[in-house]
Image 1 (tube, rainbow, N blue to C red):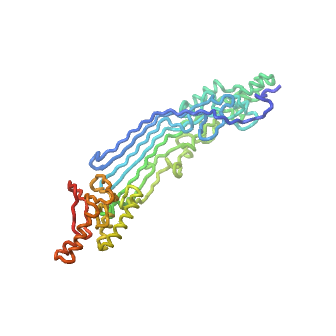
Image 2 (tube, rainbow, N blue to C red):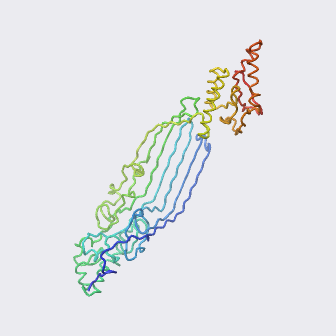
Image 3 (cartoon, rainbow, N blue to C red):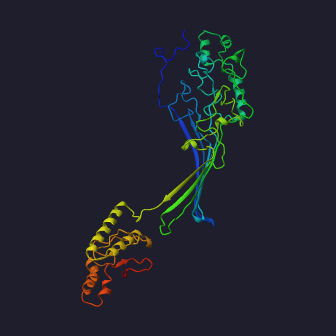
Amino acid sequence: MLAFEGKNPDFGQVLLLEPIGRSVYNGLDVVLRSDLKSPVSFVHRLNAQISYSFSRYDAQASDGDFVNSALDFNNPSKFIGPNGLDRTHQFSAGVVMELPAGIRANFITHFYTALPQTLTFFAPGNLEDIFQYDTSGDGQTGVAPVPGSKVGSFGRDIGPGGLNSFLQTYSDKFGNQLTPAGQALVTAGLFTSDQLMALCAVTPSLNPIGNCAASEGLQLPTAPAGQVGNGNFFTFDLRLGWSIKPIRKWERLRFEPQAAFYNLFNRKNYNGPDNLISGVLDGSAGSVAGVGTTASTRRTFETGLGSGVFAIGAPRSMEFGFKSTSKTLPNFNRPASLLRGLFFFLDCAIRSRSEGVKFAQIYAMSAEVFVRKPIPYFGSACTHPDIFPAKESGQRVRPIPPGVTRSGQTDEQAARPTLRAQSDSAGSSEAPARGGRVGTIVGRNSALNESGRRRTTA
């Protein structure tokens, strides 16, 4: 007679991968944002954001990022509870401040509650383990949660101070009992209950029967005085900077030396996601109810140095840097505008040079362009394309039709003063004065409410 014939005696152990896992996230998120200008005399600008999350992340496995085996092959959805990344409360706050003299200060802080852990039995890996640790009857040992608990119970339903009470309740109700595999042997008539108990084929307990305490894993440990759970997380990061304008004329060029302090208060954080207290009930160092899990002996669980996200919560560290910022001049709205502006300038310069405009005057035009002053007219060769927006006026400049100047004149009309000055220079005593109008720049007067233009003599 076979005690474990299985569902199909023609197959041995077969593992199947099916998309039947389940995880559920429920949360309440609250965010408060504020952007204030001069809230107090010594703060020019303040931007603050505070967020809080109250949530629960339940799943059928502690690690939901990879393929997991079912905790109970007979009933894959039997066990579900807080996932290994579940944090009930998460609070974050960040502030950016602009202070006098170009000083900038910003900080960010986080506080998260502790991560949970699943309590399991210690299975040595022997063939007879199914008669001692397989409480689900699916052939797996040391995988399913301890009876009376679920996934992620430690740190949620079971706190560090209530661990011994839970173990006592388990021991009274489920300890020194036959497992489903042992019950199958009794049902098949191969053994009696007393025979199996004499062979220590029973579940672990705080008070094992007979001499079963000497059997590996059957004697459950008790939590030491001062037992702690996985630690909460807290950090406070601060960054200070000083924005300097080395040349007053160049408003867009700034240098900013910076100093950053991570975990400013040097608060010790314990039990990151990759360094939790072990949930195996074997009394070993670093395990629940084991050595090294009290407030004074958990140094091995302290978050150490790392890089990137693995350094969050590490001991205090400092960082010094230097930042420079500038904007390309002129600052066109689109790359296409930049190309059009360059071609416009070259065309104007070449054609104006051919009309007798001096090189110094062409250079003056280029200087005007690079300080972002609009040049709507230059010589008789240049029209008024909408290339250089009049940013000083704060108004959008309408495109000018081809062949028409910004003052409403055609190219022929705009060229007449120049041609007249050139013709008068040959036979008139006023030629020097009139000739001075060659290369005249007509600029928009944004300070006056005028529909026309003001001419300045070169």
